[in-house]
Image 1 (tube, rainbow, N blue to C red):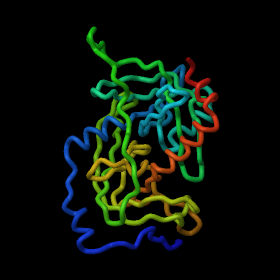
Image 2 (cartoon, rainbow, N blue to C red):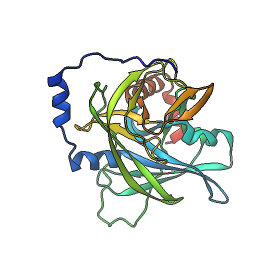
Image 3 (cartoon, rainbow, N blue to C red):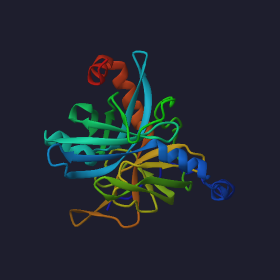
Length: 269
């Protein structure tokens, strides 16, 4: 196996102690939960699911209109590109915690993919439906979306948030705590791309979920973890690989600058 390379070497006793004493508050976890959507890829006719996972919602202006985007893992939405009979239903939260559904999401909503890095970026349609009848005086204040991102520090406590799917239509919250063990560009299967390794394994269904620190700063998207042995790629049982959120934001900025009309065409007027 290739040797991992640490992306930072600044590490002192007092520095580590600062992070070790930090505890995540219930408010930070609640905020993270609202920023994470649930993605169900299903057959349009039969309704049978072919992939279940998560994504992280964030927003940006496109031609003076606020649009919502989802950063996720490519393996969750891969089949949307391969099978035209599949659609996605995405559950998102507004700023008040009410759940809305984006139904009929197709491959056209996928703005960007990087198969080597297991990364994908989608745009949400504007036609969202609440899952319950909202009060007559309810005012929609926008979707909850991740506003703070940054780069992690070696040894920092990192929290992983995603969903455990009970069945094809229901899921529960999952939170796990780990430590940023390493940042590397030499991970087998992700060579050449910076990824973060957290020393706790995410559950099945948490792919595309959010990795964040005790201050609520988002640092990455949950992918998976593979390692190479005897020319085979195997899953680890004690590590999670996270893709840097800063990478997704840089990609989106370039897309908005270079393809605003395409984005406008996808979501419509």
